[in-house]
Amino acid sequence: MKFQSLQVDLAFLDLNGRFNKMQNINEIEELIKLISKLPGLGPKSAKRIVLKLINNRDELVKPMANILAQVYKNVIRCQSCGTLKSNSLGCNNCENTKEKYNKICVVEDIADQWSIENSNIYKGYFHILGGTISSAGQRKEDLLINSLVERVTKENIEEVILATSATVEGQTTAYYIQDSLKKTSAKVTKLAQGLPVGGEIENLDDGTLYSAFKNRAGINTNSD
Ligand SMILES: [Zn+2]
Image 1 (tube, rainbow, N blue to C red):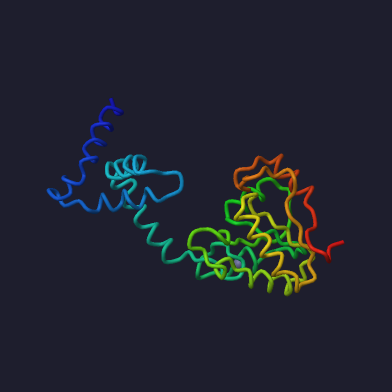
Image 2: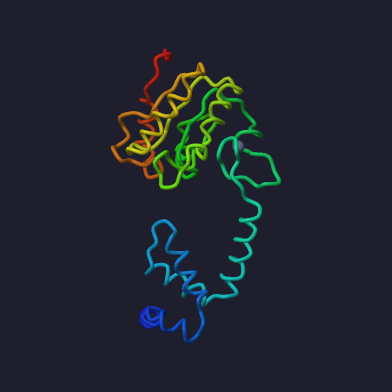
């Protein structure tokens, strides 16, 4: 019954070109466009989501609008380590850490950090690049590589573990970082064989991640 009504509504929205002119609901079209830009969602799922939202104005639209405004206002990227933080507080990822470590693990996204943390195979700092060198529109400066070099020097880091994806972009980025770290005395290692070609850290199971960490290999000449 519900499914049937969804079909009708979707068909209704499919006519949105004509419908918008008559009813002036550009907002819906705009929202569908924005939602379809989210990972894993196309126009069809975006329409379903928008319908769900519209049908639950008080339970979903209102609190979501509020929280989105707050996130926009209060959540920023730490310019030192790349994690997300509240703009009124210090960074729990690189400043207010309880323990001192001698390792930094470099990942592309926070989701990668979460996967590694959940698997309990690594204790140390994280550095979040926020993308790769060849990601569309990604500037090298945005990857905070200079700040990584600074952190390595300042914190007397002994090992930098490059945990970028086994994709061309991930490996190009790893190479670039390795080159930037030549001026430091840190040993640079890279996740190993366990990592399937094209594998993204976030999607690896704990076993694969564990073996990739355990078998990581030094990739610079001043390693031991
Ligand atoms: Zn930070």
